[in-house]
Image 1 (cartoon, rainbow, N blue to C red):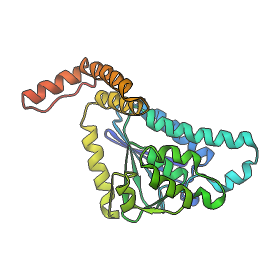
Image 2 (cartoon, rainbow, N blue to C red):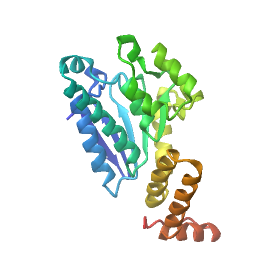
Image 3 (cartoon, one colour):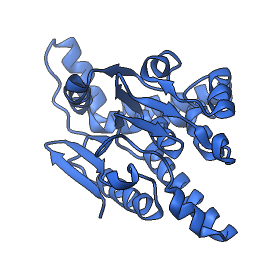
Image 4 (cartoon, helix red, strand yellow):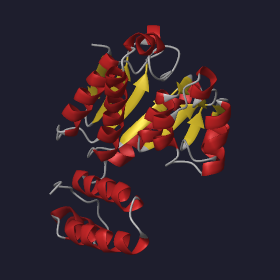
Length: 256
């Protein structure tokens, strides 16, 4: 299997370890990533997941050698549906997922970075939806990316296929921040540890509510989030958190 998982306390690192294909999202790698994310999502010991790529970069997207050999419509559909399934698994999963990016995040690799809840990169990282250069518009990658950035920069990326820098990716909201290569690992771990110090249950409720309300009209979103806030308030952790704040002490989470 070309997907490595390294667990350290309550933080799990998922590494796409296929540098020969620039960590391509091949059929096999997609299947293995979905399986790994499902396992980690159901592991109560895991609080945060960090996703990264081995070798020269994060991911160059689909394996074009594999794509070229598929030939049949059903096989193409199966591959793109599987890719969408991975993105939905990340978004709909209970655990926060942080993309740690170096090198290139291109096409479906850019989609993968955009699908994560948070994204941090090296200063020299590049992001692109370059499908137009090979006669294949990045239609599925644009679903994730267009939900993170505004329309004009999105359309420029899609229509030109040109890569953008980490600096510009931060400016348009595709990534949270960028750091030097030597600092990236520590900075991402710092953020992961901060998130892992919160209540598991609260994070799970909040992540689900965030993505669901984005797709709703304003009035419906308020109705839905009011229900979610009420559900959250009934949890032991909310009561503990409020008490700890008022008592000026550190909360002890039960994740219940």
